[in-house]
View 1: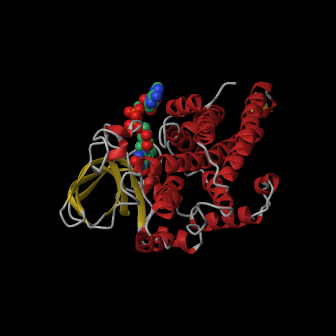
View 2: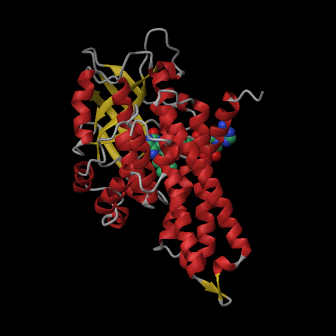
Length: 383
Ligand SMILES: Cc1cc2nc3c(=O)[nH]c(=O)nc-3n(C[C@H](O)[C@H](O)[C@H](O)COP(=O)(O)OP(=O)(O)OC[C@H]3O[C@@H](n4cnc5c(N)ncnc54)[C@H](O)[C@@H]3O)c2cc1C
């Protein structure tokens, strides 16, 4: 794996890809419709995914390229709610612990994450603070014994009602920090069964299996030793982890776009209008060709961004470019997919309808497209 070239990583025959596809066919595809209806993955589903080895791939180093393949293939299942639930658990939340957690915190939480015993959730956003996390109001007040009492409302939390713990962003005043800045914040490990934690479902149009919830924290006791990393370093942790989150979101969206195109390509060849296959129309062929060309470019870019991360060189411009282009492409591909399927694609119970409603969330969550454009502008020299 360490020395695999880009073409080898992209190939359908890559051994990790074959293994991941087989594992997803066994553990996700037979259950995903039920998980969509139940609006979340049940405990048995989490354990089965873990037993298949899907939570054990590295989030950094050369081994991350195996994770890149898993993320793309998760996207290709066509179930963005499942892919989000798994990615938030295994990558977006666990990454903070892996990278910035103390040995004690890692030992207390990561084995349960890897084995699917406790579901991980990331609670950054609030009802009035998403793009601008400076606006968060959740507070962590020292309890006098080295721990905190945490109060506030967290919004749109994936895996919310099934979480075993939340990695929660809160205002924790540290020496030298300004009260309104992110430098005055900390990331706290909050156990979901602690007194004062309540979750309320936020039923989303798509991503139905992602179990998105609002989480209310009412003077929740958080014992000593649950503040992640060093006080005052939270801003730098967030900057690193949000770039990683954008990389993960981009790789997932590449898989989603690829699923839309696969569905549409085969449908356009087999469906007849005016006595000829839909694909006989140049307008249809050219639209699909444009989308396929864009997918090819974004996919190659996505894997080279993953390689940069594997080498410890991922930067904000690269992560934002990938996130922007991959999630926007997934929307365009889903739009074409719906159009060419006609009324049958607009049925509530069609796969196309799911792919379409799911794609729309990709350009909002993990940083809206407009924020990605701002970050790309700020990190480009235009020389
Ligand atoms: C399905 C789903 C799952 C989610 N899961 C999680 C989770 O697990 N944990 C978590 O913490 N959060 C989660 N979120 C929240 C997500 O991170 C936020 O939705 C995102 O950061 C945007 O914040 P917001 O929704 O508050 O939009 P706002 O910040 O209020 O922005 C609203 C809109 O304004 C526009 N906008 C924003 N910035 C600019 C700009 N600079 N220039 C021009 N226009 C701009 C964009 O169109 C944006 O969509 C989830 C969201 C969704 C939809």
